[in-house]
Image: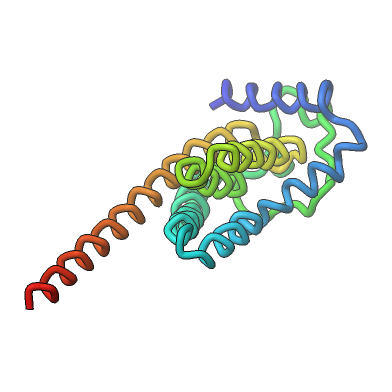
Length: 200
């Protein structure tokens, strides 16, 4: 655990030394707010649900986001119960070496895994496997930015974000597989019913 914590601290130090800039603070805050309660992904899912051609993709995204809320936020976070970086007592004087700025409101829930990252990668995974490649890649790029923003803003450790990526991808794959199975089953049932009507 100490090895992982030291890794997280070094990532924070790298970001502060080589990436941080006052101009980026509002940019990163805006990016992270896109992932608040999965907002941007919910809007995309709703848009996809409006059209028959893309309805199954919207349903898969919605299921992926629901699974992320249940599995990531309500089960894993509670079981692990890792404090946020700005709450936890940091080792070896790291608390004095890092800024830990309050650029965005500080969350009160647990830290591991990152919910923003999990929901973003769950939704982006569905999009990558469903829509045109350029849109899927764009969604993945946005998910990466949202995940990175959580580290930049010091509301998550790097390992929280990496775990969120893994959980999100697994849940996205699961959601798409389940929706595809359900759609295929309904499609077969409709075809069977249509054939029976024709025979009558």
